[in-house]
Length: 104
Image (tube, rainbow, N blue to C red; front, side, top):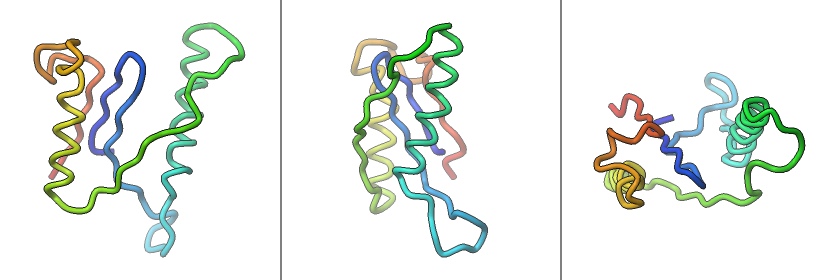
């Protein structure tokens, strides 16, 4: 996981899939990753809200394959600026729903 921004009505993730096992030729699919994230977070949200039933996440999601370092930088900038563009924070660092990992 490189970066995450949680917005009031959606979430942006910038991530690199990992191998199923060390040195394995297979990688986790984006569908598996998203399903896992949605499953774990939905259970925690439901537990936190104290409610039962109903869906938390929409079925669909939008993905974008990062092709080069310039594309990565552009997507990271978009993710970081999203709360600012929505008028939720004056600068990215002021948004509590933002997490950025080690990008090196």
